[in-house]
Image (cartoon, rainbow, N blue to C red; front, side, top):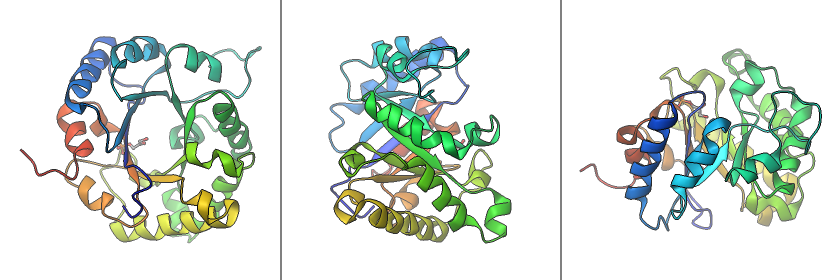
Amino acid sequence: MTNRARKPYIAGNWKMNLDRARSLDLIKTVKGRLGDGGDREVAFFVPAIYLADVSAVAQGSPLGIGGQNLWFEANGAFTGEVAPRMLREVGADRVLIGHSERRHVFHEPDDWMGRKVRAALDCDLLPIYCIGETLDERKGNRTERVLKRQLESGFEKVKVEDCHRLTIAYEPVWAIGTGETATTEQVGATHKMIRKWLAVRVGEPAANLVRVLYGGSVKPDNAKDLMAVEHVDGLLVGGASLQAETFLPIVEYDRAPA
Ligand code: 13P
């Protein structure tokens, strides 16, 4: 964490987990603990079908609630997809775009990403644009090339004035759900590269407004070290966001354990 202008952002991605009752319980617990939440931003990315109920319970708290994906058109013959305006309608104020599982399990191509990010911004949804290399790409020394290609596609339609609403999440594919976290050196080097790319793409002042999160096997026992890495502005948490006992210590990474 280096720049105090960028508020620390701790986000939980539930993926296709939990059920309705457990989702609502978790929101109640975290909401109760957050208070006014002034010095950090906390959000959950929720299965679309639970968004309306979850956002109703989160109301009145600073907890952000988001969708895990969107399609970039407002309506039409897109069976199974969710439009940005539909996410807004059920209480989402943010959305994940280009998550590794969307890219690798569902084969979403790079050339959708710019339109997805634009559609989110145009509908007043705060995007977290996810990027990350596979193990083969890292081993083959292609990490930088892959991440730059992903950044270029996601930023295709981004303007300088959008930057304060934009977050990037660096999630190495090989660290997701594997228990293998990237080392603080790897995270530091990659985040530095991303920040340099941003400065070239949108200019330094706008680049300084974009938060860059790390994701991939974040746990209570590594959150503090990851947050101490230069250029890391927050964490995107998968498995450990499914229970208050593991998520809250990550949110409170800078407080001593009780
Ligand atoms: P895990 O924290 O379970 O590795 O998942 C990371 C992730 O994909 C968050 O979006």
